[in-house]
Length: 96
Image 1: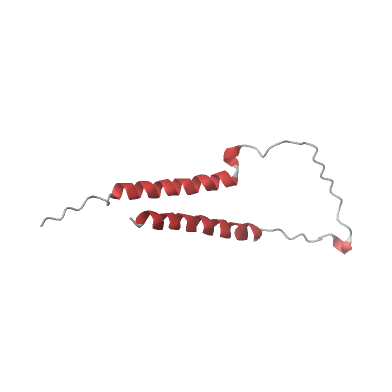
Image 2 (image 1 turned 90 degrees about the vertical axis):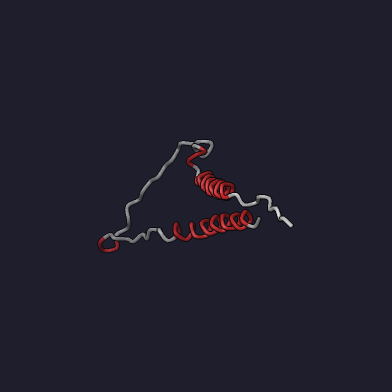
């Protein structure tokens, strides 16, 4: 009877933990720009001109949010199947 709430809390805890630690990993992979021109000469000017305008964010299945939702749903499905196959909840007959 208590297996499902405990499994649900475990899955939600894992989802919250992965969402908490993911930005810290991404934030630690930044780049440091250093002027490496001899004699302190100014860096060359770089022109980045993007004229393509698109509406939308691309394919829905490549979105990291949907990938995360799919992983959590898969874990939850595995937990539900594991709990359902174990049984448990049968009727107990007590003879006098």
